[in-house]
View (cartoon, rainbow, N blue to C red):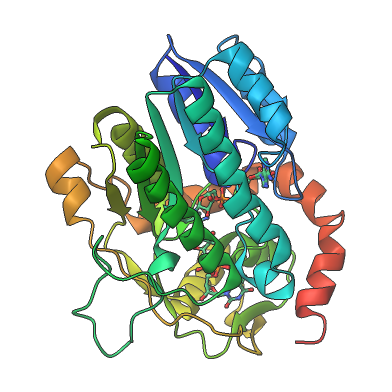
Length: 339
Ligand code: NAD
Ligand code: TDX
């Protein structure tokens, strides 16, 4: 079996590469990633030593290059993680989100049609469902919840999902889609809430909480997400959407306080800053379908996962210090300098 993983130099894609290489010693894992600011070859350093792994520095929008890879490597399964993934950046500049997240998906599926595959899996997000109100804790996103997006990022991911479903219906492409809640864990780029707070706290820098910090996210340890995708590509039903989430809703402010406590840093570092435009209030996944159909359940409790994650950032300072000493400084100044 040859699996082509796009976006494998990023956060979740790299965790998936390591999960698959570790579990299936007879699989060939190909990674296509164009190494945007979010992609990092040092993340894949261990994988590069594995003879079952091959890396292509290629943009998923580059039709010719993608077709060449399909022609020579003949993947059986494609798992598309490649995306612009940060909501704040999509508010600042939507264009590249539409290019990569929508048109890149189209190029990959065209290649799948042309060369033939047994499964195309689209890694989507719970953000396609919009948000839920804080005063209705009884409500959850199911696979039947209408698409209702808030940011250019979520709109681009929802557009891709619709295109994937259209390729299934019109061309019979064997697709599956997963919509997961917020992930956390190793190799998470420090523009996102949890790694940003860990890195700032370690540097005794202010911890910028948007609005009042009352927004709720449903956090899942990244390895549990990878295991769910592994199950879906092997046992999931063609044409189906699977929600992935661990019933672990938490307010942003509580997460930041947990990080302060774990690192023995004062809560006085917490700084309330101007809210995100169009900020979604609450995400909460109902994972009944993937549990009932495929037997998936999250294995890592938040208390353990956050400890492991914090320890990973303590043990891998070189990884994130290299990131935050580069172009990231301009990004940080632009996003937070005058907030
Ligand atoms: P990330 O930003 O950490 O990584 C994205 C990777 O894609 C990077 O390695 C980048 O170089 C690569 N990439 C970007 N544009 C590309 C292009 N045009 N061609 C080739 N490679 C390109 O993202 P992530 O957090 O790992 O998210 C991965 C996927 O999971 C995304 O599709 C995202 O929408 C989805 N998702 C993320 C979360 C989360 O909490 N992070 C939750 C649910 C779903
Ligand atoms: O500095 C910050 N301060 C802050 O209060 C940052 C970066 C975030 N926040 C808030 C905004 C959100 O309510 O924390 C929450 C989480 O923010 P992000 O880490 O940016 O994640 P989110 O916007 O929820 O989107 C994430 O989950 C769904 C991923 O980035 C997406 O790729 C995924 O689809």
